[in-house]
Length: 584
Image (cartoon, rainbow, N blue to C red):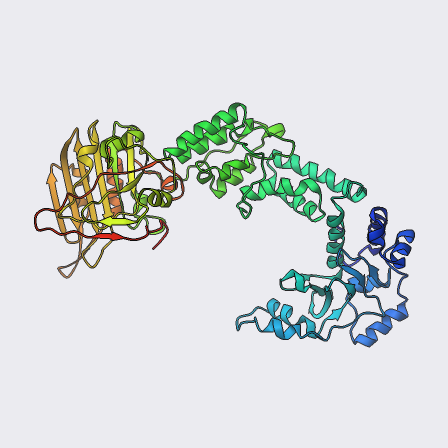
């Protein structure tokens, strides 16, 4: 185990333990020469203690008093063999010398310094010009004590560097900390040997097992800290256990989260049933309901193998991955489960704001969008109502970006034929939606609302909103139909407002979009968020922000939202790559 840092380090106990473990684990290749054989027989990697006069002579030669941890080290041994895997001999009083930057490394590293370089970056780039070199024999590794990087206890920082590491010098706060890391490296390099068993490995294996149980109890932060240190000692189980925690905490640099293959498909019992229900909810956009389903079943989750800590595959699942926000992942990890389950779960917190007004938010909203709301029809029925082709069906769930690439691979935009690639889902009790977050410009002269076709089974509404383009003013359109007949509509386009039918008072455009004037001069109309809130309240509908922005939904191509050009009317066709959902 790592010793506690402080002013009085027990070098004798630490180095004796290290030497014994090295001697017990070494083979002929580890012993090297006669010096190594001598160290094995003596069970001591060090040398005789440095006499006080030798330490004093070194300090006089250097013109510095040695830092405390290196000085007390020399009082126990005048040098050290096999400091980790790549430093074979550390200097004692006779070998310690100033580095003097023989290879010109300071000049090379200083070339990369910028005007706003931090003090730490400057120290790293110039350490070779002033440091005390301690590596006597090594695999091209420098071990340098820096007399200008000193803490309040008088400890000099240690910097190590090797050209084959292709990284800046690594800093340790003291010589003691460097030696602790070298000891961990020694353990790490021998951990895969079946006969490498000693008091230290047994203690770390005990702590790893306790960390596993802590993780299942929900104490994931304590477990992760222990596993991280055990991993530095190379304990075999520590990495696989810790990877599951860090994956759920957002460290996704690895493609494999570390759980059993086919974990979700093989999940037994109530939790497996919950996964299947949650997938069904998520694929129609109800990610909050999906999370509630998963959370309620988490205590029933069971590991599929001994070192399985959590249903980590949820985070990689195409449908359920977006459901697991960072906060939800932490809640998952904090829920007791498996053999440590208590039945306790945290309260589920919804992340979707509900309603429609979130579409107008300056931060996280949509700059331009259009959607159809359909009453009395399931999402799967929408292609039959407003699909581009007879017999159209829904595509498998995809992100909005992937759906546009799949359904409009050439990126074709035509003023003649304005089809929409729309994601679909449920929009509340008895309602479905088809949403397009990347519409082409609104053509008020040829626009045909899909609401009439979509209203076969009840009511249907169409909303289209766009920011001000080319000083024409911002757009907001609403049209509502019922059983195949349009009931009312309005289009606010800059200063103009076109309307038809008997519009309910709550949706009157003059109420929702009051004009802003300056001295009688028209400036703008405001009211997008209020209009969306009024529509949501009138029809009892909502759109799922998390699913639309980050999830995977079924999608299809709608019929054109514009009529064909009439006699004498021209049209344009543009082929470009589709705009990414997160593009400005």
